[in-house]
Image (cartoon, rainbow, N blue to C red; front, side):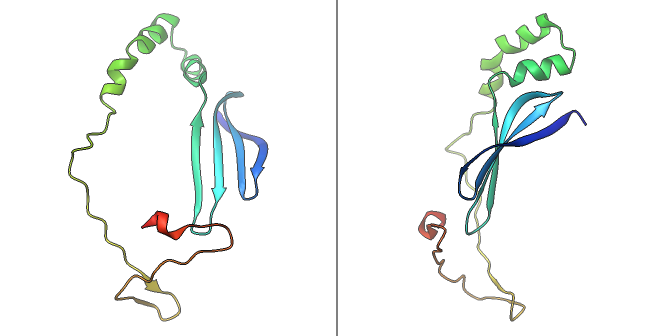
Amino acid sequence: ERFTLGPCLNETAPFESARALLLDGHEVAIWRSKMTSSYDRNWIEVLPEAEDHIFRAMNLSQEASDAYKNRSGMRTAFLRIDKNAPRPSIREHAASLTEKCWLEKVPDPEGSTLGFQAELWR
């Protein structure tokens, strides 16, 4: 209930938009959306002052807030990705909606007028 979406900040380009995400009326992030030929992409861009607004919303004391910020190196150490870790296997499947069945082979991707570059997704 305390989070709301603000109006569109700007139409950055055709098929793209940006809206403010507000916590108690304060901007904490920007919700960005980009429509492509394959699917819509949505992501959140956290604003630099977001932490302070979140701490105030939680009624966290200034001392506790400062202690949390001073341990940022410890927090990010646990978020690092081990690039040598084994990667999951990914299998592609395709279905024909008109024939209502699974296809034996995934068809080659096709481009579109929206500038979708299929080779980037393989």
